[in-house]
Length: 93
Image (tube, rainbow, N blue to C red; front, side, top):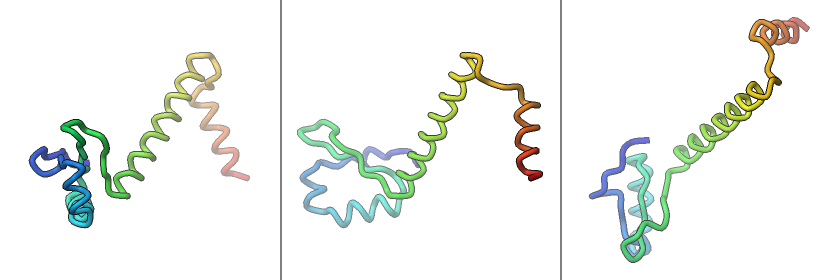
């Protein structure tokens, strides 16, 4: 995800309401999120769909890695050579 440019990517909610189509087009073109503010404080982030999907996939992968690390730490892991042998056996079927 490209870096946010504060001069272009932080918008008050009132401006967003008045220029929804233009703000959405900006997000789609730049692939940068727009931060919406209300009373000077950030309240929401607008992302293009692909960026959102990529973030969700990355979060899911990181959760899987965290779960795997917890299993290994609790002694539930298996050595790499055993895992490889199991995978190769399944592929051979």
